[in-house]
Image 1 (cartoon, rainbow, N blue to C red):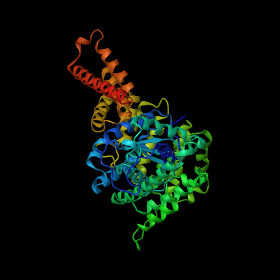
Image 2: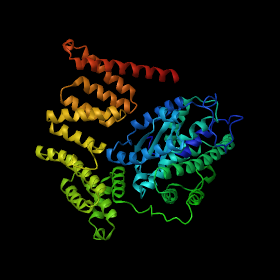
Image 3: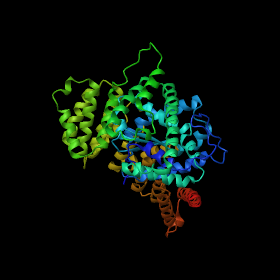
Image 4: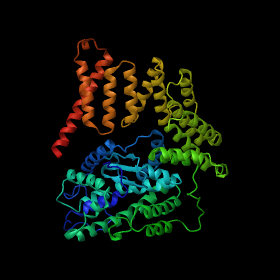
Length: 523
């Protein structure tokens, strides 16, 4: 039962909290003052981070977890300005900035949803990316969820109970995620003598939702996104709720009625100002929304439907952004169907539509390389030509963006040329030194080391990939494997570089063992 595949996380999360007795003297539900971190009833930021790590670890293991470099690059391009704005406004304190993860976990779920978790983790469903019409609409959702974390809403809910440990709370949150598969099981959480406590907790949640709207609106506009995106996003959420919500038990909903939130956001827009239409997608956004829809629904019938849409006689009459989105989706879908000829034909049409837009052309170029790499037994000259294509974009600069870097790593592994592998290893080493939580980059680096016969470094890089996804047991296994190699006959002839790697491996092994020991004690 996948944990990330859920549609109303907030409702079930609050329902789980509602079972806990209300602490006497707890702060008013309308208070916007954060509880003191030194208060014995309050979970500390460090404890909240550890709780978030535990929950995120389960999400990383979930079959629906997806690490797509292209979509991650797009979401991060929106997420980072929001973080910067929260810092500049003082919403994100230096302590939380340092202690929390501030990482986004994406899932293939087609529902229109995003959710905040303890410790600075955010979940985003591909269904959300596929339905938003602009960067500003997506920024409004991410800004809202970011504000849940910066305002310590989860910690403030935990302060309402004095009988549960953080680890038990984490288990209840994971249970709430699982319960979201069964509406009856979720409703069963709030019956009997706990009904009044449930209602009080849900009222508190409505106040938090309003606060997250207010703070999130300020964050996303400070970051330079269009304010109208917040209002138009609510329209989409209202439409989605009609599809996903049976309408039963409206008093148990944790979120305020959408029409109230729309009115509140509209009232924050300055009168008389002309706002761009945030429901009209740009060409790059339309392409990436199509990518999200393809990856979230990879059934054969759904993939074939893209070809029908792309070959429709009416497509040429649509705006260029709509054409680009459809053709991008059709090319990617054909590649997923392993139809190289059809994928190339749709890509050629996409290339013609996007040639005048530099950002869209870059996205198309990445897709073209991805389609080519999906072709088995691609001749060596064509592989080398792909590397040249990735290295010529003025938008990428001297250091390529992450999707291009990882595509180049795939090309280097396919060519198998020693000089290409060594050069790629250097580039990836530089990258992971700056972004040590990039599990995919570490995994490619491990593969390149293995191809060059550097088994010790390959095991260490694979361990770092496991650590980035919070799989400490897997990391421990790889590091111990590396130590075993050092004990084999002939290890006394290690080079100075190998000795340095051995020292790093020993240090990382001790750190992981200490971390696992702390978790065992806290449980």
